Amino acid sequence: MKTKIKELRTKYDMTQEELAKKVGVRRETIVFLEKGKYNPSLKLAYKVAKILNTKIEELFIFDD
Image (cartoon, rainbow, N blue to C red; front, side):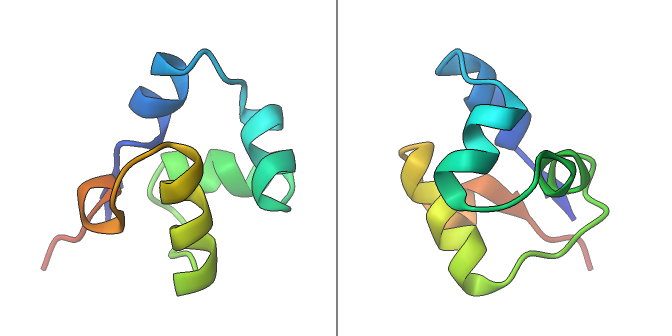
C-alpha cells in the first residue's frame, strides 16, 4: 500500500508528531503509515483523511 500522507502533511506544514496527536496515535504509527508498512483501521484512515482534508481513497493507494 502506498500513501500520500507525507505529501499532504508537509503541504499543511505539520510534523509527524502533530498529526499523531490529532488522530490519537503514536508518532511511530504515522511513520509506518507513511512508509506503507501498516494498514490502518477504517477509523484511523478516516481520521487521518479528515485532518489532511482529503478522501480515504485519495490518501491510500492499494496495490494488488
